[in-house]
Amino acid sequence: MLTREGTPVPTHSATLPPAGPEPAARRLLRPVGGLPRRVLAGLLLAALVAVAAPPAPVQAAGPGVECPPGQNDCSIWDDDPGTPGDPGGGTGPGSPNSPGATPKCQWNGKPLPCYNPQLGWFDNASGCYYKVAEPQEEAPEGQVWYVQTCNGGDLGAQSTVLRDEPPPGFGTPPDPEELARRALASISLLPPRTSVAPRRSVGPGLVGLPVWMWASTGRNYFGPLYASASDRGLTVTITARVQRTVWDMGNGKKITCRTPGTPYKATGPNAGKKSPTCGYDGYAKAGNYRVSATTFWNVHWVGGGRSGDIAQTRTSGVIDIQIKELQVVTR
Image 1 (spheres, one colour):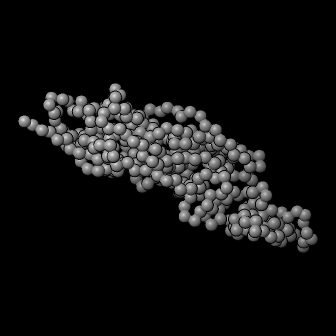
Image 2 (tube, one colour):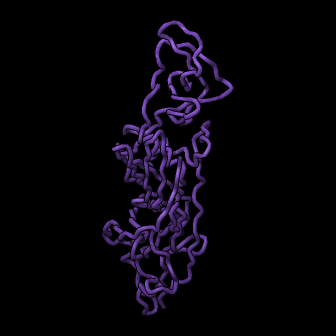
Image 3 (cartoon, rainbow, N blue to C red):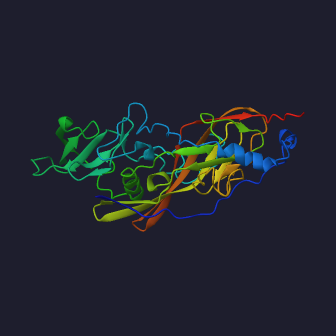
């Protein structure tokens, strides 16, 4: 049994890395016609309209893998801690190097429930489900007839077999972490829909001027999302929410934001200034840059007297930014 429920997104304060030394190219900028650089920034950004970047296509699973019926996202069985160098990698909870990062029961890369009410318990070694046959036919002493459903539960590969002892895993109680992943598979964690100002398709920015970054809010983009799964009297509930967004600025710099960011408004009081929640001080050199963002999710689960965390990431599409040098004309 799966249930879902959402609540409003909580508000957190932003934490940005401290600004580094002012680049030389920025120090060379001079006022034009007696106007301060901040005024120039406001005039420039006021002419720009940020356009949302579409998220990268979401793949439900890797090559050759099909999601089980009712499962929205197979990637929950193969945790992605982020691209190399991004915060959140390593051996933390839910990473590929931690216990439980891959499904306990699977067939040809396809995650399966370790217990099926109709088929019984799954054995990874044979790829078959087993349950005690009813009624029992006559059998030698000490042996039991089992209904065997192979090929990952294919009903066309079902037969009755005689065994001296129960197959591996037979009769095991429900596993809370497996139920947590089953609950997670019932919800959709979407990649962020990102926006920036300035944006190349609208107009160029200038060396040293601030860049604003933000992403569309919503439960499927930032959480919190809630779900639960039950099996044989055990219920596990999960809460999924984004802990941080890491922006790749396309020049080797990464900016970590703790909120979705603030949309830029050309007529707002902060036009031409730094973003109050999520921004970049500015590019030191002219050029074309490709910006993307990765959200780092934490999925906390509780049930069966146990609790744990599952890490997930989602990465946006790419936004192009063009940066030019400020040209000063003297007479």
